[in-house]
Amino acid sequence: MATSLKMIANTVFAEASFAGRSNATSWVGGIAYQRDSFRSETFPAFNYSYEVPGLFAQVEHDFRADLTLATSGRIDFHSEYGTQFSPRVSGLWRPGPWTVRASFGRGFYAPTPFVEEIEDAGLSRLEPLAGLRPETARSGSVDIGYARGPIETSVTLFASTIDRATRLIPNAADRVRLVNIEGETRVRGSELLLRYRRAPITVTGSYVFMHATEPDEAGPQRRRTPLVPRHTAGLVAVLEKHGKGRIGVEAYYTGKQALEDNPYRMESRPYLHVGILGEIALGRVRLFANAENILGVRQTRYDPLLLPQRLPDGRWTVDIWAPTEGFILNAGLRLRLGT
Image (cartoon, one colour):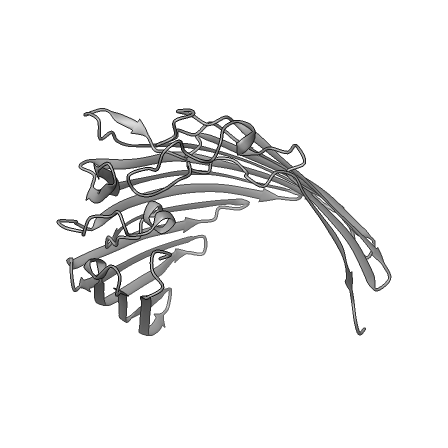
């Protein structure tokens, strides 16, 4: 919204609900109303006002002490895109030290002109919206967790599919338009978490695999979704003694990412972000120091941020795929007052 000072965007939301419980079953239901609007004196072609009254309900039942199932649904009566139904089913099973969660749901999103590229560059080069349809998404996940003693671990499998996702495409050398992609945008992945906690040490490790693809506007094949790393991982270790202080180390790995509208490379470089935190307690005073990105990873070490020429949507810079600020060090003190 940086394209004009004479712009007004607002969201109004109201909700009323009622709930009840009978034996092992609980339920909640209600009504909701949401209004999203945008007004601009400079770009009146993009003015819109969405009014969305809706009904929602959820029923949760405890089949056993360790098994709970829940189902919910919401009907929205969108003033522009008609009636939309969003259901969700989920379950929780807790056998001993294990926890198993599963869920599946569907939802929708009404398109607006404020996609990420337009929020960066403004509305001046965007064609008036026409013929857009709402995006719909289906998502599901299964999570298996285990906790006993100092060890806690979990594995999550997740997937989502978006139909008619919106995308900017060039309409001329200095014009773009927003369209729905014909086909599905898919995300499939998994996450592994492992935590060891035994005073005074806590160590947490995580790994995420994500395979995200979308239709390629250049042909019938699919392409990797830009700026989504396939592999990411993290390790955090903290040593803390109550009343004395703490020291922590963190390291985060980000794998390669597909890039778009970048003349310098088609794929980003993997990088490691490392930080150290230390704190010492001296009576009522605590001294701390925090060093971030101590390896000095910075995107401009590899390529310029500035583009050789302006993109059709108005942007002058490439997408950010790595830190831009380099090494950061800050320190200070905290003073505890009172008892």
